[in-house]
Length: 109
Ligand SMILES: [Zn+2]
Image (cartoon, rainbow, N blue to C red; front, side, top):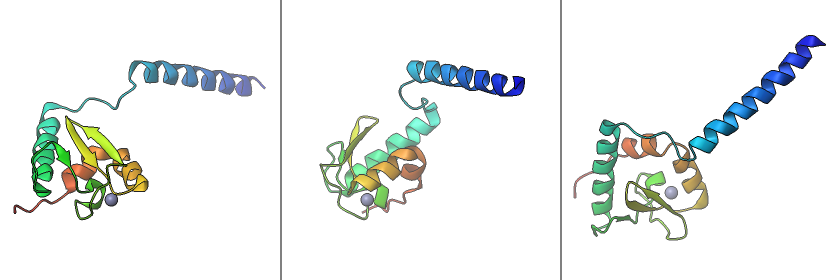
């Protein structure tokens, strides 16, 4: 009985603290300077892959830039606009954006 009560209380406290944290941090945790630089470099390369350096990455980053992205599924990252090929690609790419982005091998044209 008493352990159930304390579990309830713990759950309540956890929910409360989580809502406070999420209220303070609506966006993902900030990247460190090194990661930011890597992401910027990768985005700039990816931007050039579609033939136009316009801060719009027209190829789907979720498909390692192998597919054409669609303006219907866009995402902003470090000042670049990324076009993803589908809603599911956007979802999976959005879950681990930095990791997936940095894993893309971009061959120089
Ligand atoms: Zn895709």
